[in-house]
Every structure is written in structure tokens, then in C-alpha cells.
Image (cartoon, rainbow, N blue to C red; front, side, top):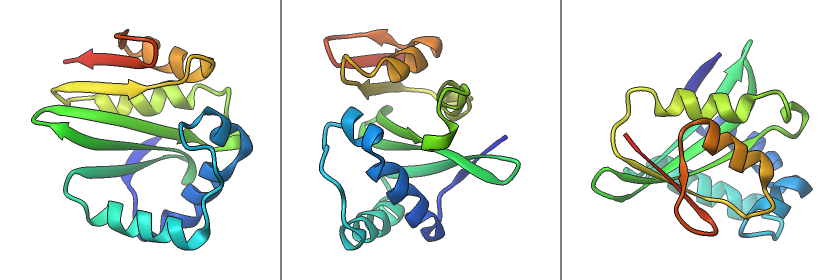
Length: 139
């Protein structure tokens, strides 16, 4: 299992995961994203020094993605998605665990209260609930 930086070739995979009905239901932005809008967002994200997008692969098969955005010095907000056909296999906990290895700072995740899988994922990785939607880990 590896966590690698995303490339432009990953745009379609990320779009498909993002537009999955369950992903949209658990997202704060629930509308379906168009291909052109996503390509522009993805291109901008890959060139943004304050954003990193990673892909988790197992046996060369993409199973999830995680994104970090710099909020402030040593403070990051995280977002992720697991491939619809790979959910329930522990990849969410694993992607966050691998991402956090060796990193220092404060990591923030905003999660809807009904998104139990993501809440389990962050609590399994040592995040603490800061308010109704926000989970934080300092390391």
C-alpha cells in the first residue's frame, strides 16, 4: 500500500469518487460537479503550493484520496474520499494514518455528524472533537 502524490491523470478517478451519491451526501457541497469544473479545480489544486492531493493505492489500484490545504503556519485542513467499491475495508483509517506519518502540526477535519465512517476514521487516528463538526489532532 502506497500513498503517492496525485497527477493530472487522476482527475477522472477523483471526479467519479466525488460524484458518487454517498460521497455527495456526506460532503458539505452536495451538488454533482461537472467535468469541466472539476478539471479546472484539479489543475488549480495540483499547482497550488498550499494544497497537496494524494492517492492511496493497493496493488497499483487507486482506493482513496486525501487532500491537505494549508490554513496557517503548521495548520492544515484535511479532506478525503474512498472509492465507493472499496468502502468498509479500513482504507479510510489507513490513508489518514499513512498521511500523518512524520508530519508535524495541527490537522483539522470538518465532518457532518451523520458521517459515522469518517468520524471513526479520525478518532481511530487520535483526533479529538472540537465542536459539532470539527475534529483536531496536534502532533
